[in-house]
Image (cartoon, rainbow, N blue to C red; front, side, top):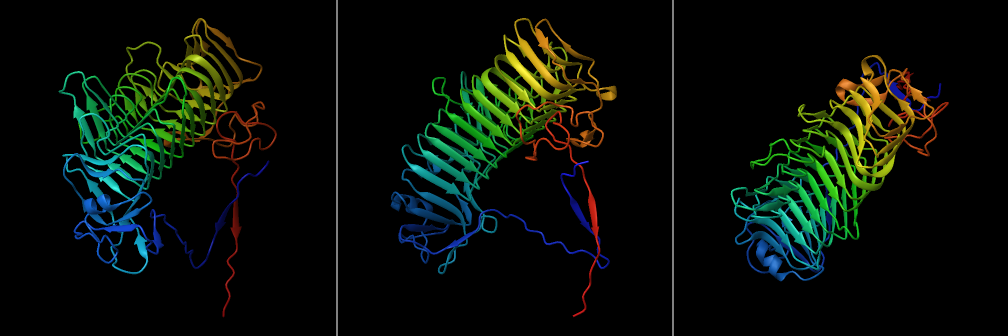
Length: 514
């Protein structure tokens, strides 16, 4: 048996001391440079120097393109339409320690810097045709009647890094014929890069529809979101993140290593809750979504936790687990082509409206694409996968277990399968396939136990004795959901995980007397 990972367990007679390194967020220490402006909540005068910081609005008025503003820890409020209105290409750093001399030290965890709209105005507005970086801030209590209550940017080149966008609200439900977009933040046009930032408990609610409780991005040239957290946001459509591209150009959207949890559940301070696409919706994009986790979101109607419309899509190494939706419980692909869905776990999701017919965990409506090495398991829906609307799909090395029907294909649609684990015993489907469409099941079909490590705890990796081990075919996929190599051992494992063999090594304690 091939050993992939070795876990060394050190047994020490006199105890074991562990050194733990904790990432506390951005920290830097630099020398002040010409063009640097310094701000304190109680700042005064016009010097805006490290020795004599000024007020925020003074520094914004003095700033020129290329300048850097350092904001000391504390809470900043304002008057008018927004606390901060940026009209120049500048960088704003929060978390300055406020020292009057010496290196400029920033640590937003030790010196939190808050932009507070006080329930009366937006937090930040970024003007057009400028390049702006915001780093190390909390933006909270912003309000607006339409879009971007916490932050609004249009036709800018915007970078958000280590920013917390929290408890911002749009609520125009009592105003007839209204829409709302991006209560936490909205970016229209331009470009946007989001890194290591949090969008939490933001609420967008309007009479006609609301989109993107945490973040809405519309018609940008390019958008990249990395290492973000979307938690407890609410909107009628796409409670966490909403991306609307361009039908003609399909701009790129990259979303990596981000987490969506608890969106659409009415946990934000406004009265919004999820109706469609509980965590995220993407339309008219070239979307690359990799290494993300979507869990515990809610949409009362349809479109699942993740909905993608009319786009080119790569979905890789994502976990979509424990979500609830009225109809499609997990993943909805509509007129999406081409798409490639590789090394994903889609498990434990639930369709909540039993009166609705044809409830799947994964719905492919129109379009065409490939599913490679996916684990689709124990979703409380009529079907694990539903193929309809003339779609053509290929599913290779799929674990498709514990559903009423594993896969259903409607008339005029086609599904071609190879290397499928259908389950047995408690993991068997009620029926493995059905529908009036064309289903080609291929030459490798396995009926056996998947032997997941801890499905009750959400761990759908393969354990010892899984029928999926070495049972698949070569689909051209060289790594699994964790980035571990494929294959290991005699063949390719079916599903998102390439099975792990664990081994403990006990090392003797050697003591030396000095």
